[in-house]
Length: 637
Image (tube, helix red, strand yellow):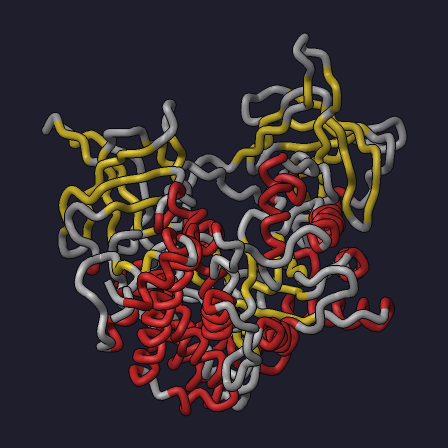
């Protein structure tokens, strides 16, 4: 046994453990520096320090450091669980303490304060300054009504909205422009500034149209358990020539000729012959614009072309016809074990049908809005529909058809409707994320928005594609938010973030709804954690998105799980709310939750196990990586 070793043992096991840890961390440090040659950091210009720190963090996370963390914790030292934004500094500070000396001031390495400053500067550049009292901004997705309801937009800004999100997959440029005008008026009125993010739709991977059902509306009053009426049905009678949007609480919209509707007064009774031939009576109780509000105390099946009339002592019977009423949707009802054909042909979907005289049944069939995606799918690949409500496996893959077997559905069957999302979590779909519509929409976005949201990102090449397109349309400095929503994007996340560091103002949206389907609900928690860690290491702001306080926004009442989830969002630089009739209340609640959490938590601490995404990225760079899926922390020579 060497003399230094015997000297350390005489000083006690803690000193011996400290010396061994010092050597191990020294070997880890050398490993981090060895990886710097894998990337030309000078190409990142002013983001070079962030790129270097990100590379160090990815290299650090190829080791399983949990045993080292436990040892450091026993010695009362930092367990490296908060090293994301300042990796080398944190490593050196721990080594200095293990050696028994003071922590040396950093030279070229980022200190914790500098790491936090870089992250906040990048967040401010992209999302605007954070409001007083909370670090996380609030983003809200606009409903169509935001184009016509200036009061709604003003209430959102007054309640705490910091960023307006417009989804270009919905509405039209005229609606988008009206939403932004309403926002600018609200800003002037309230003295607050709010950024505008416009999300490009990207390739729409959704179910195609289905056979229409009958053109009929079922209108029924609300009854209690004894059958007594608690609230009559509210019917919005509106001119068929120029329909007006119904008020909240309407149960049905019934278009009729404006010439007939005009003379109708409050208190009048109108009658109609419904789809069953029954005569039903409605009483007019309100008037808005050219429309009328009527109530019905019995169930009515209003069919297209139904006869409707009014008569009073002063006027003779005046008759008209109802319509047009859109056809009802006829969804496919799918159960576990059922067969389904997903086709690339532009056909109208339909349910299963028996072949005459053959004793066979043709399975239910539905088309796909992105037929060019189907050739990438192989036998055995899983497919999910409608946000994971229906699951299937590919039994056979033909040239134009995928023959599926339903593996996941509700016990009584799950309805599959048109325009529902389709996910191929195990399939690499090699399609460009910029469609022709996106390129056309981008011309509007760069003139009116502060941020462009980029969907369907799968690789660093996709990021470079958008960067070149922004240069072509003359606005290379616009903010960019990359939506991470597929397994492919998560698997290539380090490379995607490296590419994002070449954009002047960039951030990441954690699209947890699609991610849950793509990676599996049981893995979502760890995946969203890894996304937060990697974004912080690159000093890129993150946006916590999908179903935040969704129950409150849509039904007016949150669940306990939703409130906890919203509080978790405090660790991101922005939290996104989706639209709903109670979205203003949701903004107020989120603002309160985030302010309260600000006093209790800043970001997070973590256990540093091996990360597969770090391993894959470093192998892709050609960097020296030990064999085996999990590298142990290196020992000193």
